[in-house]
Length: 208
Length: 251
Image 1 (tube, helix red, strand yellow):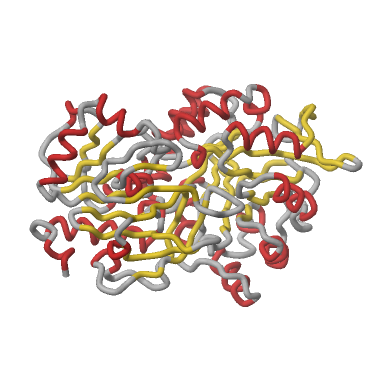
Image 2 (cartoon, rainbow over the protein chains, first blue to last red):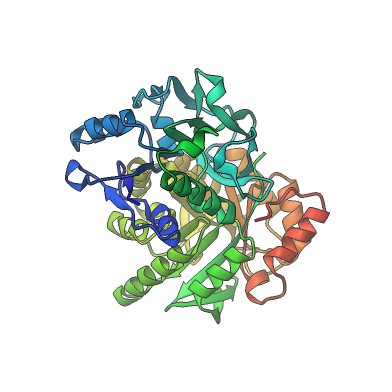
């Protein structure tokens, strides 16, 4: 199985790559179109700010390929900023990929970023939560949160001064606001669930 | 709501963990990679790794150890100590640090704080501050607490926040290593001054000290001596905090 990790930031991907390697993967880091090779799934990590990400993807000649992969229904996991990129735009000024309709805006909270472990209330059946030990506590670090137009795609909420969407399932798009690579055993299981879904032909498991 | 973070701190010198009292009198307490992994398994919420770097060789050894720790850790790793350039920050992040902690160099060259925040995001930048009570206010010290700066604590915290600090790691020089409790008035002052998470550091000697800081609103507490001397495990600490009504995270 080939996993591509998109590097649209400045190479701060160490924990995600280490987590994938611990799960037996040798991810292909894609920074420019020269790095593209066959991929069964893509992972958009969560680094930096949304501003200018799409421009960087254009400059590195990746935008067309990403749209093709999305249209071909390749499973794509967005983590933190990666999840926010699925949507139209961010309040801070950046444009998203317009794959899902909605925006990202600042959490209403007196202390930001929201940094630390928080519990996610999940709705039943999403495969991402299989075999996890409750309570589903994950590590968050973010200032913005998504506001999807379609509430039905939200499959988990977290609470930090306000309730906000923490997980989105809209196959082939899977998005989580928290960082599984930094979230101990539950985070590892979640990543492993995603990989297993990718391995199980075309992401069909996700629809269950 | 976000759970209070219990963060072990490893002070690393020549590839070994050391810990002193009032910033002096360092004692060897173990191998940093092994200790970081043990703390992770023992339900630590994050690891802070502060290098005491004197030479180029120290720096290379440190990068190698950080990469080893990263490969094994499934929780966030903040690395600091001796950062003197953007290139050094780049190397630390490439070797698997999730955040960098900058202290003295940020005071000497505040522009680096903005550069790090712009390039990697504010969430990547922890500004470490060592401060000491002087009469009616707190004064910021640099160089591991040895050099008095011209900065008042509140003024520096606000400036660093404006430059892009995502988080503060605030150590009380008066309380550090004494195990007599965190400097609660200083922490309260910092929390009221900035709108960023503050990690409390210096002085934890008992579970009551952690509980009182958290119950006052501290989002994160740093531990060193309490753990390294193997008086208490993080699991024991968390269990007793839970019994006191603190909503900690179980792995």
